[in-house]
Length: 308
Image (cartoon, rainbow, N blue to C red; front, side):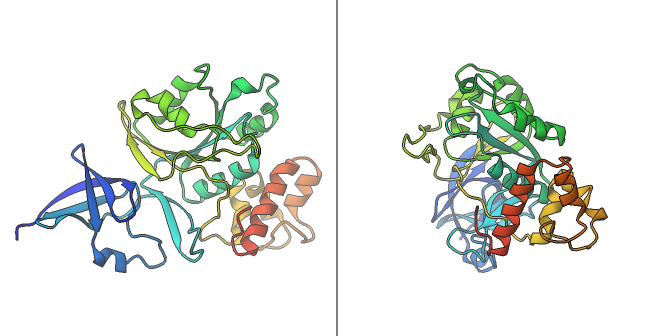
């Protein structure tokens, strides 16, 4: 039996198979059992964004090998907390998408995504979508805190077109993941960036104020101006993979510079005396809501990665 091989990029995981981009053609491939046995603590051996080798034979196409990943964004698997779920591999950057209204601006989840991305050495930016719905610009105060910390914060509106071209330039020639709450408009933004994508979009639930899922799987989308866009399902909670409570403070930029001045080397900045971080909070040099966000993440890790 003749076997040929070709390289490709995994675009989607469809359960029993993965869809691989091979020379511009989408090919459904099974995953070799030898790879599945090597999964270890990972939920699956192959992730969206993986560079793979595909074998073609009389039995069809199969993923036979996975190249070493240069980056990945992970969380604990929702059904097996001791296993790693890689949301996407080989990323260049993460864009955390939130909305000014409908659903309301939610900095707590933003902070989780920032910690997850930066701890993986990924570039990260924040997009505040639906800015046309907040004429009073109540999001400004919090957005400016992130800007002062050095984060890129973009403002967008699909309805008015504000910020769409700026966002398109930001994505050019990169592999970028849009990640955030359900209902913040990730798929609508993707459609505004490239109308040919025609991603399904939905509305926010009237009763809960939360978004309803329209994207159900992680997908890697090729952009006509270069690069890939990763469309992910809306996430209402996000656990941090392979992180200890004492590591969290390092990924809060305003805390990192003060941590060496804490009395205890392993200070958790909670109940310990002579804590430089708590002193900065009391002096209003660190915003209380950022500190509270930090404490929630630490408590979640103490409670076995409870997803606050």
